[in-house]
Amino acid sequence: MTQFAALNALPRPFFGDCLALQSSKLTLHTRHSADRAEIEQFIQQQFRQHHQADINFFMPVLLSLHCAGQLTAVVGLTAAATQPLFLEQYLPAPIEQVLSAQQHIEVPRQHILEVGNLVASRSGSSLLLMVVLSELIIASPYQWIAFTATSEVQSLLSKLHYQPLALAPADVSKLADNPTGWGRYYQKQPTVMAGHALPAIASAQQLTRYQLIKRLFSEQITQISTELNLLEHSYA
Image (cartoon, rainbow, N blue to C red):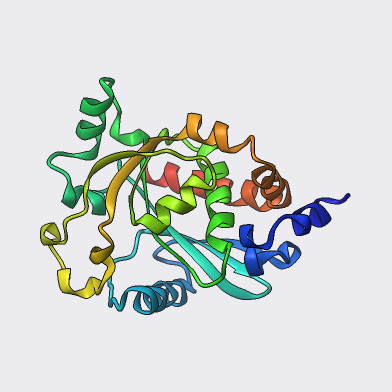
């Protein structure tokens, strides 16, 4: 059985409308990318649709997934070494101090990556993007991943056997900018979470669907990884 046939044989809820992976495309967008505005508008549209929100916060690096020519999912990335993290507004101290105290080890700030701005318009596309992102993290210097997760995002992560640590509730009253623009998002009681990347990803890699996506996207993952490394060197 070919890789495409094997993936198509999996239950549709795993990947939904993104089964046509032959025509799926990954793209990295910085603040200077020509199509950056289109990607930000997609994030805004999805937050408006799902949370009645009107957000104006976007992470410096965005990774998009197009399925069959349609933009279907986006996730944002912020390196903790380059700027304050959005989620640090909810924490009593910088993220590296919180993690170090909880884990009883030193967690350098340069090893932390914040993930956010996660949206998807098609069933399964966010899961595909999470697998791709996991592979990108393996090839990066980041060892800890931090994010704010609703119950829906936590359910998505559980499909990959990820079990992140809860750090603090995401309290809307602590936002410095546009607290009313998030609509009903905070009614879902999001939580600030973090995870040690490599052990979690090693567990996810045992899953058949993870390995299939990894192989199907291998060339694109390598290309995006190279682009990310170039960005990291420019920050250094």
